[in-house]
Amino acid sequence: MIYPNKPWPSYTSKLKSGRWLIMICLLICFLIPGCSDDNAVRNQYQANPLSSIEPGANDPGELTFSIVPKYSYIRSYPGGGGIFIVRLLNTGIFMGDVNLYLRADPSLNASLDRNTLNSKYNIAEITIQPSESVELGTYEIDLYAVYGVSPSHTGKYVKITLEVEVMQWGPTNPSNVISKMDDFVEWLETEHPELGNFSNRIWFPYMTYPQIWIVEHWTFLDEDWEFRLCYHVTIPPYDWSKILLRRRGQWDPVLAAQRESDGTIFEIPISEYPIMYGY
Image 1 (cartoon, rainbow, N blue to C red):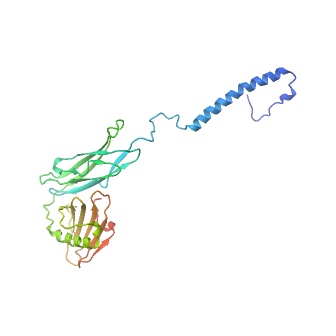
Image 2 (cartoon, rainbow, N blue to C red):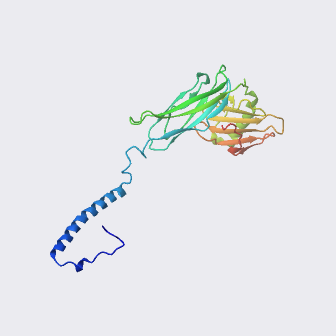
Image 3 (cartoon, rainbow, N blue to C red):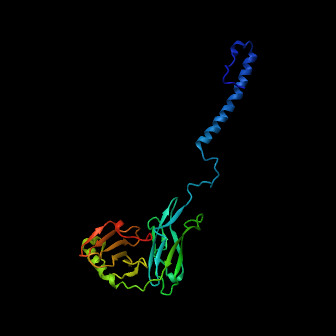
């Protein structure tokens, strides 16, 4: 036993025969292998600090992805419409496509614009057109994103649930907002020709927020654009109107503008376009 606080005894004064030399040599031979083995074990753990963790307990290469909705709730009405935007996010090793599947009540007439998502095309849209005979109430839409590029990961999926509240509203007639939309179309094609032509498009119009008065909100959809318009239902000089443009297949809007009662139109920050209920 070694006592670190006590000095080693002086063996030189007791070595009177060769017998002591033999014993010392044997002791040294016994200690050296033990020290070597201890160092080998210590170095092994320093070189592989995860050696004590079982395989699969914390796999950093595990395939993970998620589908994120821009918003998960919208209002609609019989004969109305609506749109959801979702985005694919990958948080691990990820290759190939994710296949999308939709489950919704048939009376919502829900449809996907894209059946697969990947690193290049990571945004999809779900549009609804509730039938005139749809029952009022809250409906759930389930979106499944299934990954199956390799046999080892076939069947991995995520699911998100979206809500549509169908309210009593309508029928609505967009004819009173067409002239307001035309004013903006003329301004857009003059001031922002880089956005393309907005004339002679076939739009699907619906009220964005049913049961809202004073300021009416409309959405016009075609294959290229989500064109939102709202206007203050009053008399001059308070009858302003605003638009918000988002290119289909993109996450964020690209432009917002306002028209004053005197016909002056100017661009405004996107954040100044009024948004309700989170969408």
